[in-house]
Amino acid sequence: MNFIRSRLGEATVLLAALLWGCIGIFTRSMTEIGFTAVQIVAVRAFVTVILMGIYILIKDPKLFKINPRDLWMFFGTGILSFLFFNICYMSSIGENSLSVACILMYTSPIWVTTLAIPLFKEKMTLHKAIAFVIAFGGCVAVCFSDSLKLTKIGLVYGLLSGFGYALYSIFGKYASAKYNSATVTFYTFLFASVGVLPLCDLPKLTVLLSSGTNILWAVGVAVTCTVLPYLLYTYGLSKIGAGKAAVIAIFEPAVASVVGALYFGENMGALGLCGIIAVMVGLVYLEIGNPFKRKD
Image 1 (tube, one colour):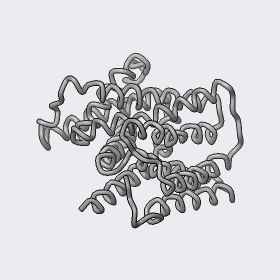
Image 2: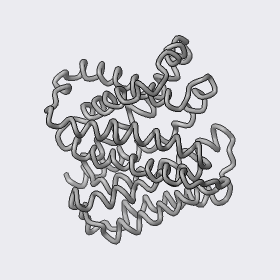
Image 3: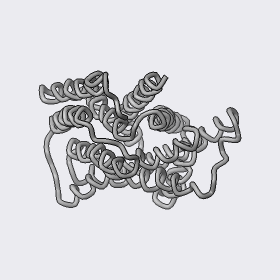
Image 4: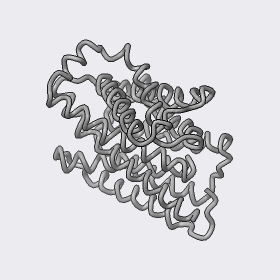
């Protein structure tokens, strides 16, 4: 039974990474019709709160119930992680090339693995370390297959985006141990919605959302790249270790590269293709490289 639970957790985290990797389809299209990066973050938060609220009302209103003493968990997932990470990541993109911003964001497994040792008593096994090095090396190859630009402040923003991204695995691990994934997702984005409200130029955003087409894009990015992946990832965290979840989620930039090649006609090049293969090898090794002795 534990074996099945672990495999299910890994599968849901991987599916979440696949969905997150498709976000470029929505963000590029929404940017072209006038949305700013912060407004896209706001839309993801607002629509997710509404949809998750409706979902919980239909499924089980008791899922709204939380202990006030646990609000810190959702402040962590919503403000310190989702909102903080996105602001830092967008600032990093403004300073650095997209490839550099992406690879700096994916320092998150290092943060997660480091924090998970004292917080969750997880062990850094040789098996996990080797899988991480292979997958992360592939991620580096994928991201650096483009032109390179890096500034000092951009480096700070990039590392902070990785830290903020990692915090969801940490706070989400605490929250998912006590609450349903729907509850965690709802309160995460409720906090994020409150936090992003003064930053998103609400009057302009309201005008943008007066168009039916724009509303469809808003709902699409919220459902495909927010509601579903966060539900899946949070569920996965309740089944597997935070460190392993972070390593599996590193598959996201490889998916983004494939989407760029197939949907936008971007050329990955030999280095990008080798990187994708390396990520896949790392994930496969994580799954089958040590079948007789699993400690996480």
